[in-house]
Length: 264
Image (cartoon, one colour):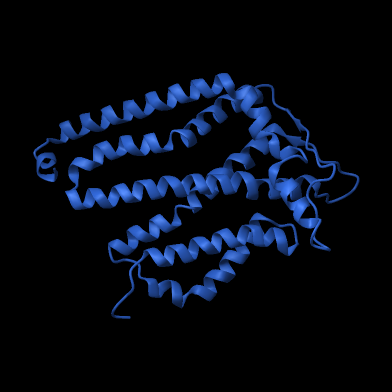
């Protein structure tokens, strides 16, 4: 209970936080070590999958294009070969990718451990609200990661790997560049998909109201189109829509999760 926590001294609070941080570190280390061991297989089957024409998004778009005249295909003979230009890059990528994938896979456990530290400071009704936020936030994070992996990153990869400022300059994609873009897009979309949760929290404390979303909907659509165009600079409407639609759905879901303002 909140009253019990207030009786704890500063050093007791600090000791409790230290215990939670140690548990988080242990979980991350164990997961990272396991992923480090399995990383070659994970790299071949998961991380490098968007580099070939057999990737799920490409095959789905090609099937759709077969029934829609004029729609561009994504499969064909697409293939990206990565090169390593730094002596220690492969070891660094092996270590860093194991860590960041460990963060993704243990995300619910990490949040739960933080929850065990925060929960004693909350009242029973507050705990119920945080529990709902916990499950919703975890689900949205993984949904965003999935969209980043299956949709956003492959589209960006296709565009940038095939783009040439001159036919005399061939593209050779480095391992570091590929992994930086891969991890950034996957985590970026995971964080973006937390927008409804953030709006729900702001709505509960009275900072945000549904009227805000209605008033600035047109501005938001323009901003989301620009953001989608920056993420997918391919020039065709289909790939732009593939990214814009999930972002706009997030906007509308966020609007439904906040209360109305009775006194506009």
